[in-house]
Amino acid sequence: MGAILQIWLLLLGSFSVFVIFSVFCLVVGVVLLRRTYFSVYPGGATTYAMIGPAKRDFVVDDRQPLTLEGGRLVIRLANGKRKTVGSRAMSRSADWKALVAAMNR
Image (cartoon, rainbow, N blue to C red):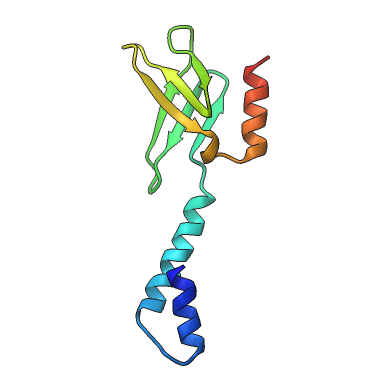
C-alpha cells in the first residue's frame, strides 16, 4: 500500500526517497510470494528457506509418516514431535488438491 501511495505522490510531482524503498519492497514481496515453500516427493519432503539456498529434508517412512491434519502437512519425527512441512496457504490450490488426492489413495 505504501508503494502505491508513494507512486501516486510521484505522479502528482512530489518526489520522496521513500518511493525507491517502497517499490523495492513491493518487488521483493512479489518475488517471495512466487517462491517454492515446500515440495513433497515419494520418500520425503523438503522445506526451503524464505531467503537463500537453505533447505531441510525430511525422510518419510513407517517411523516418520507424512499426514494431513486440517490444512497442514505434518511429519512425525523420530522423537515423537510433529513438524509442519507446509500448509494449504503456502501452496497453489490446484497443487494442494492434487496432494490431498494422492495422499487419500
